[in-house]
Amino acid sequence: MQTKQRLDVPLSLKSVSDSGEFEGYGSVFGVKDSHDDVVMSGAFAASLRAWSDRKA
Image (tube, rainbow, N blue to C red; front, side, top):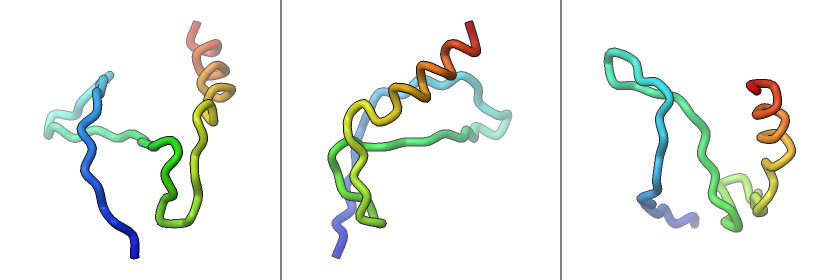
């Protein structure tokens, strides 16, 4: 059985709708998720770098 945890983490919002809603993705490194996947540190480095390069 999976145990739920609550985490308080820093968050930077780029925009919020008039109703106060926002969309985003979150991930925790080194923790097995509900599909038995574990995201390792650095897993998003290449895609974040490519995204950053497009915005420059």
